[in-house]
Image (cartoon, rainbow, N blue to C red):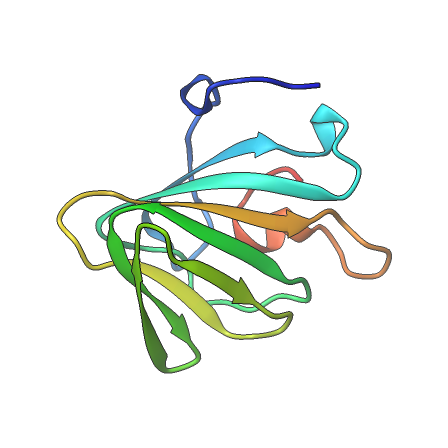
Length: 128
């Protein structure tokens, strides 16, 4: 079992091309013995965003704090604390902070599957 406060996990800049003002904490992943999923906490600064991208895996997002939008292709959906988002595989998407404070959200993804390549690295720069 792993029990840790999120602020004890290092926040690293998302170094993927197209990201701006975005940091991520890999809260739980394969290095913790989690067999199926990884849990990451994204912190997007005012005016910041994740890269506009798609990938072969799904992910689920829960907004903890702030306001923003998620792009589904060219369609915009508003985000605020308590919003849940399901991003299906291969869907073009991007998370943007439209507020003045940080946008924080949990993002859960599956671990690498045969033939799909490294899941976490494709979307956030984690070692997953």
